[in-house]
Length: 81
Image (cartoon, rainbow, N blue to C red; front, side):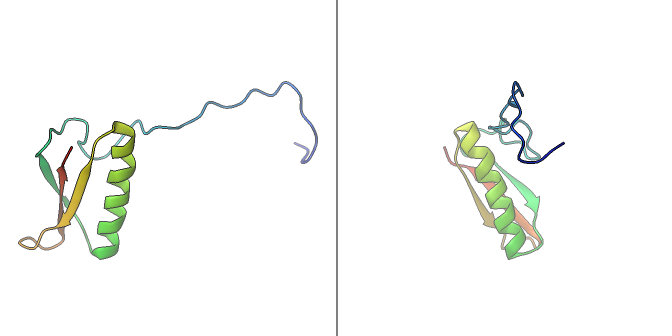
């Protein structure tokens, strides 16, 4: 493939906007439902939260993630709307 050379008739790949698969059961949750997931620290909890919120935006749902104070190395995720 030559760089900077104009190519004609090249099809545009389809967009991958929207998330199709999620490792957490977000689609099945109703408002008020929660689940507990393993969380190895503050930085990991922030990554989990970002992941959840990215999927939630596509699903048009809202979630909140909180550290469990009664169980080490876990976080709980609630659907709030």
